[in-house]
Length: 513
Ligand SMILES: C[S@@+](CC[C@H](N)C(=O)[O-])C[C@H]1O[C@@H](n2cnc3c(N)ncnc32)[C@H](O)[C@@H]1O
Image (tube, rainbow, N blue to C red):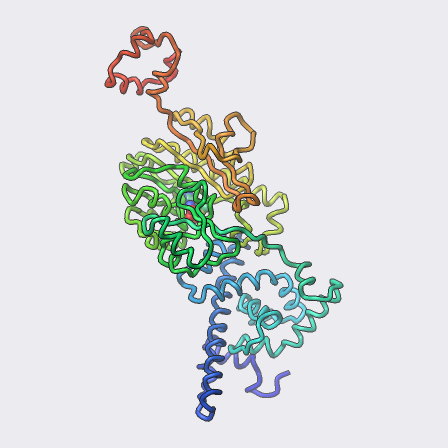
């Protein structure tokens, strides 16, 4: 019940929809004593930054929830928060995570109070964020029209929440949350040093001022920092000297092993972590062609590349499947990194996907999910066959951040005949790594898996290498080789000149008996 125009928050919200708090209040402090005035001004600053953080959080939440509903995310929650357009990243990130954790609870409370009906539905995400703050957040003054509206109905919200306590037979909000929220596991942090901008020892020294840092024992440019270390606004992260990239994800570019001066194609490149890693491994020499289909993600890719300081990356905004393998601009591409869209089942907790509504549904082995995974696998297979079709390519890495066999071993198995027809065989990336492919076909021991629990992220890596044909011919223990013009002995074969051996490499292996 609203008593007058001034007290009616709905009307006020209509008048000043998104006006920042102090403008709307339009108050000055002439009468206040200087100390009191200073206190009020600083409180105004806190309110002001909370006001904007809530709106930034609502924007991120909208993208995350819409993407989740369509099962086609523009980016993970983290990448959305850490995009350049979000100013107050720390507060926004905290608010997004908290709101998502409480979302099922908030939905129940808001449904019970009928608050999301009518015009407020259009600002649904902002209502969630503010309702979280009103019910569970810090006890700070709230400025802003939606804030005032929800504060006005705070009693109703609280009594709806109290009814949930009774319904769930719990006494504390913690117990109530346990009934609703999905647990988030704690994990160590990995940091990849961008050796284009900083050497590893300097990065260790600089990061060591903020936290304990160790070198990783497997990936050369990888540092390990303690669980829970928050480096997202560290100067080295901000200026691209280090990337907050996981270890398993960083193993992909290392598995391709690109050399300075090579031409490398990154087939599905955004947001560009692996592209930037390739550029660092190639010491900025040679050329990287980075292809990305999604326009929004091309922008993110461009930002990552600029931040990395790599100057040898050409970005193609287009469909990798439609790149013409015979186009002269790809004639020297000798290595391809293919990290196609996948279910993300191996890193869903790291990306905070477990906070999204679809997560629990996605983790049920239901028909919809297997259909989605099958569709992804069909694309992944096509993309891998296409990658193996580039004329000069010698090495192809296929990777996913999925734990499903359908997207991993099954895709590899299905392309093996084609790969063999192009003279490719599976090689063993990181031979010392203990976790290999599921034993579903002969040769799956070449494949590499990382475990989402043991290794933080669940990744899959397969490496195809074109056979070194000439060496194979010379190593074969055959006595005679049949050629269209007769047969020659193996002894004679050893004596032929280097020049001739080169020509031998052109012959088809089927001629060898
Ligand atoms: C798993 S992400 C790649 C992550 C990236 N390699 C990295 O490490 O930062 C897959 C990307 O492939 C893109 N993509 C999907 N289909 C594609 C296609 N047909 N051609 C090019 N890019 C595609 C998606 O938009 C998405 O950005």
